[in-house]
Image (cartoon, rainbow, N blue to C red; front, side):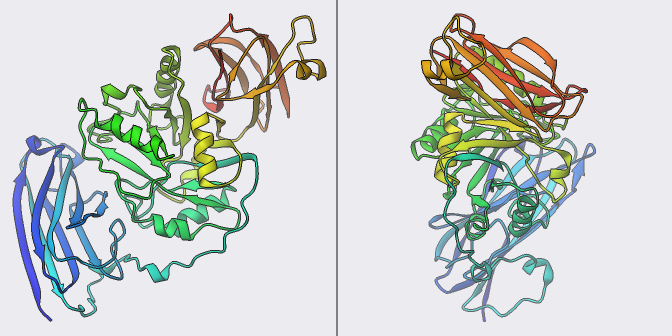
Length: 476
């Protein structure tokens, strides 16, 4: 058995930050396995680690990405298995690329790197080195679950933003993520690993037993992160602000019946969370139709309060964006921190129906409380409570809908702590604030199109932390 070796090395400074550096090699027609080994030194500077990740392309295109930290990366790609983040399959002959993605290069001495590529021809012998074979995925190891008949119209609770070992969630596998979702009683969960789609085959195979396992990707660019839900194709994230490329990705995503979401737009950003803050000025919000305002726990490090304020400002500018939540889970302990989940009214528990409902804004966000928020057409002079006479006068609207004429709004809640209070927000300003009633409760008020352009409700605890927030009902 023959092997072909390629070696590359070089040094990187802060001027090389936020770059994509290709290193090219040629694979022969009888390649059976490709091993890639990247080493970098020093590992850190100024008290913070450098972040250099790898993306691999074969002659036909994307072959995988390993968005994970550390000064050493080992990758194996073969016909029947691959390191998580990368795609197994035939190894076509021709020009391949190993790309160094320099997310963060801290000031200080230059970072030296050494990149070795070994191509084994024909059928390679088993490699006893555990550092290269650890965690390899084989398609035949994924057991498909019998899919039940989809459930019909209703409210479904789930997570839109998650990670596994296919990116930077340590050794947490797709199976572990599914177990976490089932344990939390979720109805659906989307996998959105950083810049790769390698875990989606496992995700699709995990569907069943009342849990919808759905597809996505997190575009983890150098200047902002975005979720593309419903895609099973790799989305090229190597884009820059000011070029219109992110707006084009959003347009293509929506045109395909999928969902594009600006993720944690007000996160702290560089250098601590490299690329996390949204810096695409042409899509602030531009043609974006959804924005993640609740990332992880409300009081976490994503500046959710600032994202909420930004969303309110965008609504006041006339943009009709729906707000979403995402746990951004990277471990089995994440759900113990009470992240926000999405409670979506969909025509069925299917991926397509959930995507349609998200685009319509038919959801509220909650870390626990159950909420009902609706408007019923109201005839002046009748009871303010939307009873029989009000229903007879017209129709009912929920979050995301546009109401016409005078309406009676009703907010109902359950599962709130004793210190909780409701807040009615009208055009970004507080209209009413009052304690929630013990146990279940409701509050009703009337408004006309002359009073507001949009109306929503928050539920907060005694420490002013968000417990739930609805999407708006708009006035025509």
